[in-house]
Image (tube, rainbow, N blue to C red):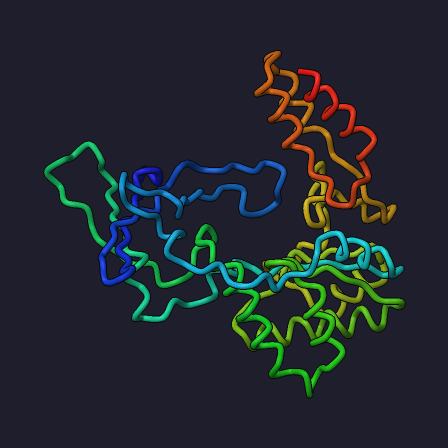
Length: 295
């Protein structure tokens, strides 16, 4: 089956006028630097026909409910016991209301060369990452769920309110006991929402042993050991758990530069591959930006 033949055709009403918008599959992303989700499709909800609008043009983005990445990374460094986790397939756990599913209709065929065969029409029942309102929907859904547990787990509810960025949970505690209690309560809270926390990581051998001993992580959730040769990242920044230090993995950048073309476009692409939300690389990136100015 050729996944790239997937084409989403969406209808949306704006000002009493039906507008035909498209969400296209623009390609696939293969991430060999990840231990899971190495392959995923890339959708484009901003695709439009001439004279029409896209689905994203028709939707309100919603307020930003996420904490600042800079602040989150600084808080992550405050505590001696640090840990992280992911919400497994977070967006796909949110169901689209029945009356709204027509805006995510799509056509699918497994044989694009056969013009006599009509494509089948489906509708997405879960939210897609590329729709510009969905990050707000995810975080608003999580915050609504957390309010139910403010009386049962007040500290953990407050922790989650401040330490979630999209589908990543990032935080820490002063001691192993508090970190273990918080991690188990986090899993219980999200289990009640039908969500699974997995890819647990920590800089504490004692906490990791507790997770394994008490069977806190098992099955898909037991990825507490970093895959050999693959850097583990916290909000895009590589984290060495053994040394409890942040560092920058330059392998992908070096691979890109090894096939470089001496052009302005290539330099811009190289700059775009440097993700440094805290500004650790500022003195080095500045030199590249100065070179860009001279060009």
